Length: 292
Image 1 (cartoon, rainbow, N blue to C red):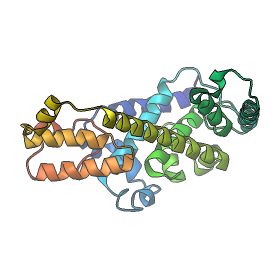
Image 2 (image 1 turned 90 degrees about the horizontal axis):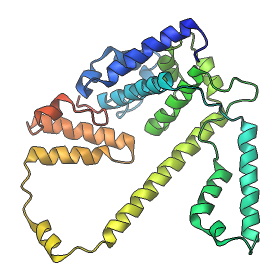
Image 3 (image 1 turned 180 degrees about the horizontal axis):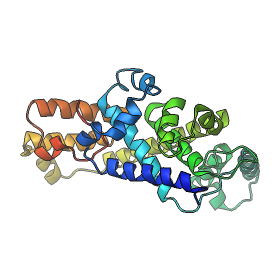
Image 4 (image 1 turned 90 degrees about the vertical axis):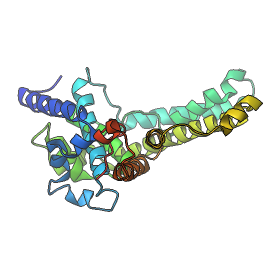
């Protein structure tokens, strides 16, 4: 439960604003007060002007979407899930490592214990067992602000590979007015940052591995004579339909930054040439990118 009435009011207001922002089209999002409050604050300008990618409208929309989603998740979550301490995580890692060594030395274990579907999760437990960032011993299990900051920090790191303290602070102020850099740094300790980096890298590795496996499987599927003949037929789709299909493909890229920039660029060029359908030109949701 939220600790006090004032905190509840501010979080509820931020939640309402976040939901309204997420319901907008990308074009409207780019011109919204929600985005401006995040991008144009004096404490966040340096982050957004850091390079050409961060200076794009598409990137700013993507960041604002992540902030809004973090508020929605935070406000809609029920009972707070207790986060583990560093000691608890290290203890589980040690136990998993010991079990892995014992299994490797035991020739008599059941065959199931040697299968990859059992050993791979065990190896992950020995390296990064927690799905949540650790907390320091003695701190409350999980405050709403902490939950929000950890969630947003991980999604922002996945997008930009950085932990920008001031950006996180400005985002958190919407729900908790007394938030300062110190509170953010207290939450994002070096250990917590390392845990987030490991989690993001592991998730990307699993996603790439899954995509590679799917690609390899498709390559092994034989193509019959009829399919080959169909493949040679002329594509009867219009240019606009092909562009829409291409945008959907680019939105599925593993690298979120590359996806934002490519979709943004293609949409901009297509609009200039008059090849983008009206629904797409007005904004269709997608990954939140817009043309500048």
